Image 1 (cartoon, one colour):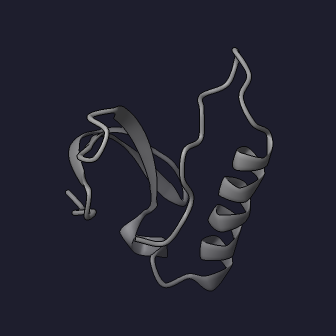
Image 2: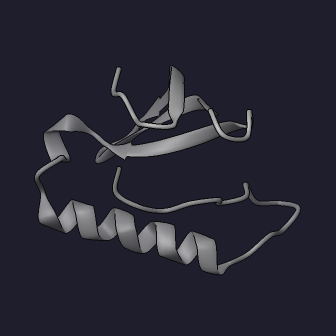
Length: 77
């Protein structure tokens, strides 16, 4: 399982064509979160890196809505 500073990854929730989603605990807040990480096979793929960054930025720009998961942070870890 990948290691990300500031988080404890608990389990893999889903595996997609370019990224995997993990359930995690954020150390600083104690909040349960889901983290989407490029899969190892795409880790060095610049096109997939950009696509995932764009997806995260779009998700953050949408703000809060009762029918959407809340995005807290997007970045490279």
